[in-house]
Amino acid sequence: VHVIFNYKDKNLLIKRDITCKDDEFTHLYTLIVRPDNTYTVKIDNKEAQSGSLEDDWDFLAPKQINDPDAKKPEDWVDSPKMDDPEDTKPEDWDKPEYIADPDAEKPEDWDDETDGEWEPPSIPNPEYQGTWKPRQIDNPDYKGEWVHPQIDNPEYAPDENLYRYVDSGHIGFDLWQVKSGTIFDNVLITDDEDLASQFAEETFSVTKDGEKKMKEKQDEEERKAREEAEKLRREQEEEEEEEEEEDLEEDEDDTDYEEDEESDYDEEEAEKLR
Picture 1: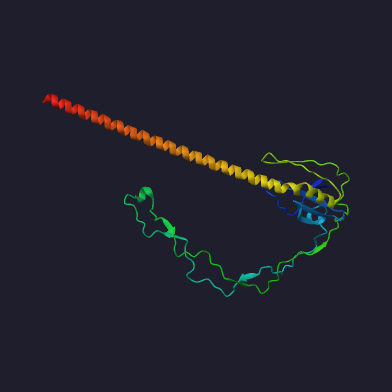
Picture 2: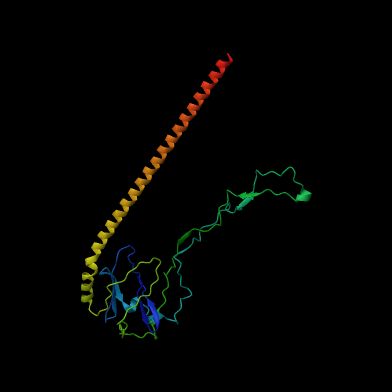
């Protein structure tokens, strides 16, 4: 959920994350801004986020900044670990990463004069151990992470009227959506939190349960329609298979009949010859 205020001709986006609803149901979004410069965001008439306008938007310059005159001491140690000075590299550590293939043989048709001096191909060295590094131990001089000292920001100017907008008598929708069909209704602008909550109960709360029941009914009807379509498809496939089997049987019967006729004809011809 994006909550954006326009302040001194700049659009300021809330610095906190508010997760919106991403299902197919209708939802109610409420923004409450109070004269003490606090706010509340409600989703479906339940609080989703709240806090201070000054803390959660960049309306004002920060109250404190890093002291420009402060610098980290040169002898400040901010590494919690260090190399063990007593750890030494083993004498047999250094091995090449690749070695000549001991099983490679010079081709019989290799000509040193025309092909140059033959060299066996290289293969990974099974004894290669990589770059040696000493083991790490706790650094006795570690002082922790250095924190830059803060000072009051001379450019900070409080504003008690962050909440105030001279004219809130209109509303507009600036939409970017990838799926059409979104509907907006029951829009209310008021300075009465109780009235807003009551309005939500009288509109959203009385329709949300019915909407869910309607959606469940629609899903059930679609499920039944899919099952019926699948049943019809299977029945049609079975009918087509039965028709194919019948056609095959008829073809076999015709073949047998033709063979019988040929056999009878052959016998008649043989009888004539005798």
